[in-house]
Amino acid sequence: MAKHETSNTKPGYRVVTVLLFTLCAAIVGQVSSRLTASRHLEAATRELALTPVNITRPAASAPTSQFALPATVQPYMATTIYARTNGYILNWYADIGTHVHKGQLLATIASPEIDSQLDAARATLRQVEASLKLAQITAGRYANLSHTDAVAQQEVDQTAQNLRGQQALLQASQAEVRRLQQLQGFEKVYAPFDGVITSRKVDVGNLINAGSSAQGVELFQLSQIQTLRVFVSVPENYAAAVKEEKTAHVEFAQDPGQSFPGIIARNSKSIDPVTRTLLVEVDVSNKDGRLLPGAYANVRFNLRQSRPSYVLPANTLLFRAEGQQVAIVKHDHLIELRNVTVGTDFGSTVQIVSGLNGSEDIVLNPPDSLLQGQRVQVVASKGN
Image (cartoon, rainbow, N blue to C red; front, side, top):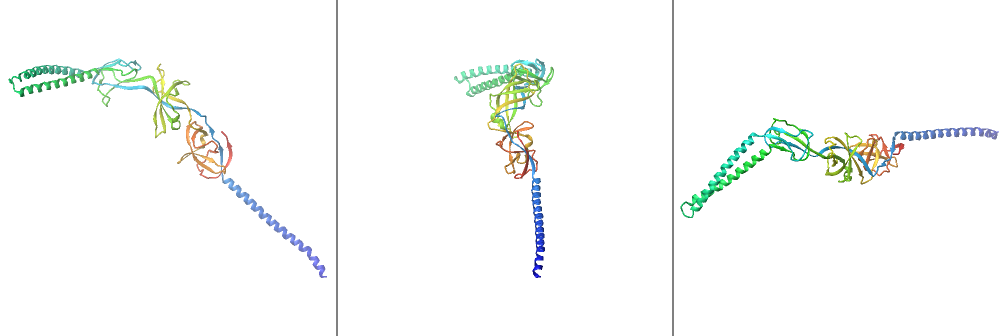
């Protein structure tokens, strides 16, 4: 009877065991599923927390750069002509636009005071010359009588001294006459060099003063325009490539679509510390007078670069206190902020002359919040 009861309890034990095992398996599976879901959620959260970026690679720029820069056009020589004597304008002989030659008469000035002073100085000179002749005769007589003891030695010395005084007075009178003659010569105003009159600021009867001070009156402005000086500020990174006697092309707004050859004549040999540019002079021939000084112009250079450079979209640049930077995505998706030197700005693209080797992945439109060493997620890669 006992054996029968034992055999009846075995099936129930197995059912309980199976139920317990099933319950444990369900619990383990549910826990494992939750852990897996938690890990996936954590990974997805980390993925979503990464800043998404688009990247591009720098493109190598051409070894020879062609670019245009705004320029200032000036005459080869220019001067403002002032009066050198006081008076009033008697006549003028050259108006604006008149081509004149060196030594050509431009105007005459009436100076009655100078003329009167010169007449008085000449009269004084004649008087001094007469006194000198008398002093010479007297000194000669006393010198002859000194050997006969007819006159005292003191009188001989006095006559000799009087002669020397008259000679000095003659030199002073002659110098005064020459000074007034020079001032009288300034009554005629001549052109100092060949050129064209670009301004006339006096008319007949105008009272004028000598000199270029605040009281001086400007008579004419004269410019030599057979050759024009075109001044252009070249960025520092191209300074070494600018060579004298090389050719540049100048474009004027008055002649759209046409360029005029020019020669790089000289440069300032110094970088402007404010603009970081080199002042370069380009001389342009203008024998026919077609080109006008003061006109708006562009100078187009064709310069060979001394070292390789790269081109990037302008929207890759970051402007920080450290300078201009780009954000580079390293192989581990970490950000490196690197300083670069920008050469020519082409508008939508910029030239990078230092800081890159051409193999970097550069972030497009980098956010201002991007930090050094920050991990990012690359969304798309755009080649140049």
